[in-house]
Image (cartoon, rainbow, N blue to C red; front, side, top):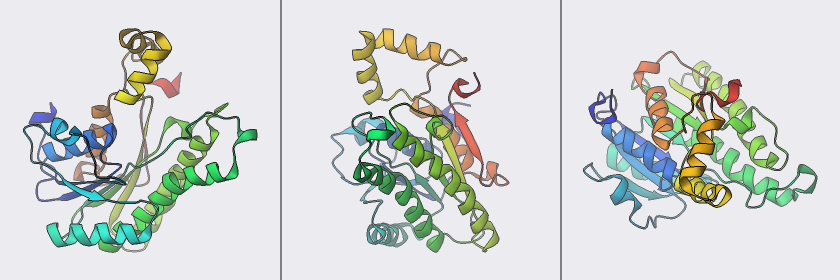
Length: 264
């Protein structure tokens, strides 16, 4: 089933995507829009450089919100804006995240840098989950989907801070899912773990490493047993499934989207 012919699983529902103006956030928002959702793209800055118009060509345009995911006050303001406009929130995608700018062995990671990454990648998910649980209503099929990473499963010689943050998101998802279910929230919480996703940023970096973008795509494809590269649309499709009633009995689950990379 193509995206354009996808069932309108989100007709009449509101969805919030954090980190919404990045390549991944735009792809997630587009897929949910195609499935009928009223989408809110939230980011720390609302300057999109025309990316929204390009990504949403021919579609209903999304709402754009300023959101600092590390601030409880910013979350409260975002939720108030969504409730005032849409009357409710049915799906939260905790997509916002950062990486360490310079790869470093764990022995050399400054504590302030460690805390900076965890503040966005982990605190942001906790605050978003708390804010969503306060406003999501029972009986509407509400859900939260967090963005993890293959780094949650493996070790790293020089990117351990990011991996620690995503491992913590994986654990937080399971605890949040059980807590929500046992405490009457009627909200499902799951996590997706993408492999190396071919975004413009990754493409530019890989092209420099391998000499050209075609050479980089070929090298990245061969890393996965499937022989294919993970695209943002692949991740978006998995999220659209997990957030829908098609996944109504899935709680606290990990969904790996990596072309088979983790199993080899």
